[in-house]
Image 1 (cartoon, protein in one colour):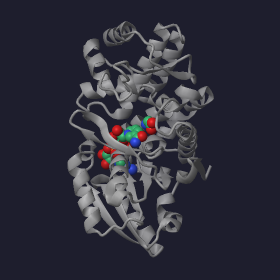
Image 2 (cartoon, protein in one colour):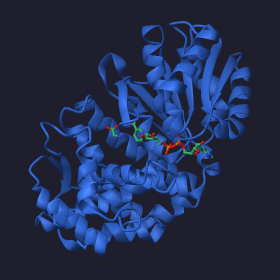
Image 3 (tube, protein in one colour):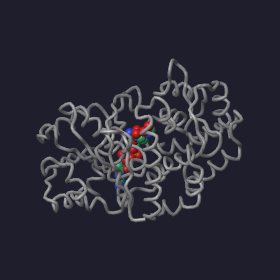
Image 4 (tube, protein in one colour):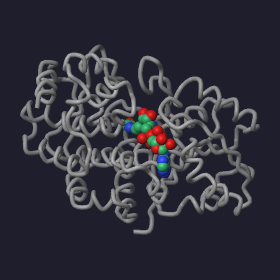
Length: 367
Ligand code: NAD
Ligand code: GLY
């Protein structure tokens, strides 16, 4: 498979996700139709700037496009009000106009921050995403959620702002450390678990090859994940219903991230892997799916080296439940859970007794 395009159908805000190996080297070709003048500001982080910025700038130059790079520190702390202010100042100093395009080159941190900055700069400047982590290619660069963190929690200040195009170049993943690749892979598995059992089976057979660097397998997985996300976002852009399915594993996962201080001790995708196993364990406790399903999910994650147990990251189920109460899906004090009637058959529910959540967590913490 050489590459494919996935459409996100959102009326006048529709856009394409181009998935290919080597796309970054064609940056000028695939972006020039979106430019009103041959100028492109690029927002990136320090690590990605060293690895991928020179090739992108060369490709733009080859198409006669001048670029201006704004390089921010790598890491979650950059998704903050301080760096938002710095980024806006630098974009204004660079005289970025309302009809210019801004490009986000990096992982979810750069994509989320840049999307938010683009939404508020001059009341809205269009932006494109060139995601360089697997997590960003299959999730954060698609669907228009943008945000920064608050001292009260992650992603609490943000807006929906759809990009004009997404350029997912799987070759950029060749430089990504294995731990981050695996963390993004957990989000890929999430799609199989929430709505596509054959895709999960495909991942069981091909996941290792994908992680080890096979571009064709990566393209196939990114295309499939983006297709699933595009379909969900198209029917529920602002998460009034079905979009919450994309949060499979996230209610438990966010609690673990909060407990570990949103630090490198537990990456977001790692918390999603543990969270998916817990969501299946809770579903099994409620008689919705079999214990064998939970074991199959855990086996796939752990075979590849992802964590599957909250033990080691938390000790107290009640403390985790308290963290869950800060979840954005809490409505009227009631938690929302994504449960499963089997692999590939998830649903959203608010009818889960806290006692069952606590029992599930206690069992996992003491296993
Ligand atoms: P990240 O952006 O911090 O990137 C992870 C690390 O990899 C960073 O150190 C970065 O410098 C480095 N990196 C990026 N690309 C690289 C490459 N090709 N080679 C080598 N190193 C590279 O983290 P992430 O996992 O991409 O994203 C996590 C963020 O995404 C979180 O803030 C999370 O809240 C957000 N997120 C948003 C959505 C959404 O829908 N908007 C969905 C999921 C996650
Ligand atoms: N990452 C979840 C969403 O985009 O809704």
